[in-house]
Amino acid sequence: MTESALISTRAPVHGGDRADLTLNRPAQYNALSEELLASLKSELSQLAADPKVRCVVLSGAGKAFCAGHDLRQMSGQRDLETYRALFASCTDVMEAIIAMPVPVIARVHGIATAAGCQLVGACDLAVAADDARFAVSGINVGLFCSTPAVALSRNVPTKPAFEMLVTGEFISAATAEAWGLINHAVPGAELDSTIDALVGKIAAKSPDAVRRGKALFYAQREVSRAQAYALAGEVMAQNMMDENTAEGISAFLQKRAPNWT
Image (tube, rainbow, N blue to C red):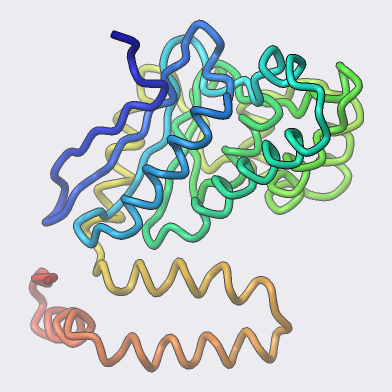
C-alpha cells in the first residue's frame, strides 16, 4: 500500500482542534506534485468548513520542508495548457491558505525553495529551525519564480526579494526572520515547542474574533486606506455583537478568565 503524499492529523486544543498537515514525499524533499497539490487543496477545503478547527500547522516529512514543484514530473509533460493548469492548481492552494478562516502556521526545517518558499510566504505565520534555508531558485534552471514572487514580495521588502529571485541564492533563517518571511528562527530542538506555544496562544483567544480578524486582515490590505477603515469599522461592529465578545469583556471587568463558546 502506497503511503499518502499528505498526512492529516488532529489534536485537541482549547475546546477545539489543531490540524496538522504533513507533506509526505521525503525522498523528493516534499516536492509539490500534481497529486500533492490536489490533496492539499482538498484537505484545506475540508478544514475550512470545520468550525472545530482552531489552527493549522503545515510541515514536511524527512529532511526538508518543501523543495518546490516536482521538476521531474513537470519536464515530462511539455505542454502549455498542462503548465497553465499546474500553476493554477498551485495558486489555488496558496489562495486556500489565505482564505482559511483560522491561522495557518508553516513549520520549516531543512530547505524551503521555489514553490516551497512560496508556501512559507502564503502561510499566516512561520516558525523555522535556525539552520533552515530559503531560496526562490528557479532562475538557476532558467525558470524565473514568477508565482513564488507573488508571496515572497508580500512578505519581503522589494530589493531583497528581487535579489533572491534573480540570483537564486539561499538566505538563512536569521535573514528570513529579519526580512519578515518568517516570524521566528529557533534552535531545531525548540521548533515544536515554539509552535505548540504559538498554537496555544491563538487557540486561547475567542474563535469568533480570530476568524473575523484573519478575514479582515487580508481584505483591508487590498483596498485604499479609506475603504480599509470602512471595512474594519464594520467588522469591529459585527464583532461586538458576538456572544464571545460580551463574555470576554465581562471576564475582563470581573478579572477572571473568559469561557469561550
